[in-house]
Amino acid sequence: MADREVGTVKWFNPNKGFGFIERNNGKDVFV
Image (cartoon, rainbow, N blue to C red; front, side, top):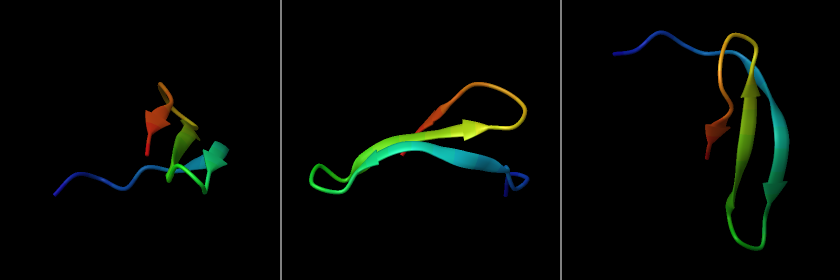
């Protein structure tokens, strides 16, 4: 299992069900 990452929601579209999380150390993550 991977280590836990910490970040902040950059934006999220509830109608489409996806967005991005801005990680504290690294690239943004598509969710």
